[in-house]
Length: 149
Image: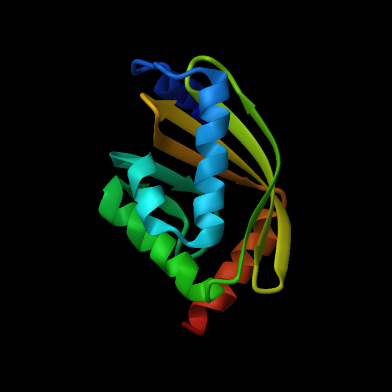
């Protein structure tokens, strides 16, 4: 059922961006994230952006709207202390506003493979889904890290 909902959500809005533009947009996003360039990230997201973060930890769940997205990113930055980020391994995009990004994520000494899925509209990041290779390890890290913040 979740996969059906996911597919329906991806087809509900107008798309006006090519796969090449999406790939460039995402590379720009990850560079800005690595540089902690909040102005660029803020420029790339919509006011109604939605982030879907899986797991069983305090940051998991759905983050809707610019305020909730920035609260989530702020907490991640607080835990990381500005160290870490994502190394982009590959980006696959289509001409309908969808992309999957394979990454190596690092925060403190926690290094793990991650997949990010994105929906893009009119050159903006609209929706995000995170997929973790080892969700139990992800949960353990975030539960422990957030207990000390």
